[in-house]
Length: 223
Image 1 (cartoon, rainbow, N blue to C red):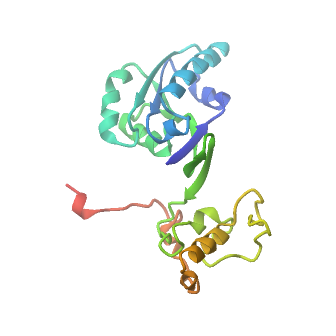
Image 2: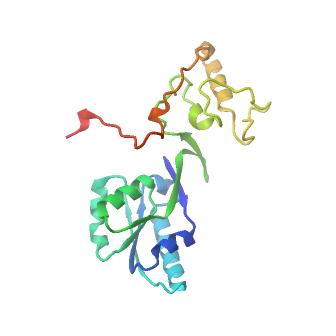
Image 3: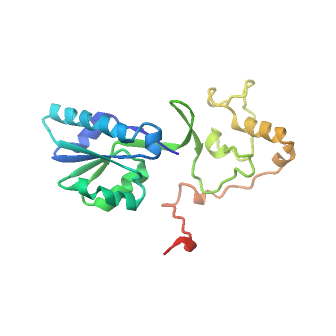
C-alpha cells in the first residue's frame, strides 16, 4: 500500500493563510491504513488547523470529508456538495489522490497535508517497510519473491555485495536484513540454488522514475 505521513502543521498553515473556507479531505484506503489520512485523521487535523489559523489571526471555516478513494474520479464526484464556497483544499491522501483532486477542482488550490513516502507493507503495528519501488521492471520471479531493488541498499540485481554482516544484516544499515541473504536462503530452502547462478542483465532504467512521466496503457480496457 501507499504510505504517507503528516506534514508539520506549521507548513500546512503557512499555505492556508488568506483562505476563508477550507476543506480537509481524507482518503479511506491506503493512507487510512497507515493512520495518516483516513476519517479519524481528517477529524483530528481539522481542529488543529482551525486553532493554528486563529492563533495567527487568520480564522477560517474548516469543513471535512473523507472519500473512499481520492485516486478514482468517480469517488471524487461525490465531493462536489462539500466544495460549495471552498477556496482551498488540504488533502491528506497520497500524492496521486492530491493531484487527482487538484485536476478536478482546478482552479481551487489543493495543498498536501502529508508527505507520500513509499509503497510498503505493515510488518507490525506502527512499522511499515518498503517492498516496491514501482520501478517498472519487476524481477520478483527471479529473486524468489523478494525485491532487491527496494530492499537492497544498493539495489543490486546480482548479489550479495560481499558486505553482508555476520548476523545477516546489511553493511549500510545494520538494522535491515541483507535481502540477498534472504533470497539465498529462500532459494536453498526450495532446492533451487542453481537459479541464482545466472547473471541478471543490465537493467533498463528508462522505465523507472527517470525520463518524465510514466504512463501505462491497456488498449483492451479503453472505452
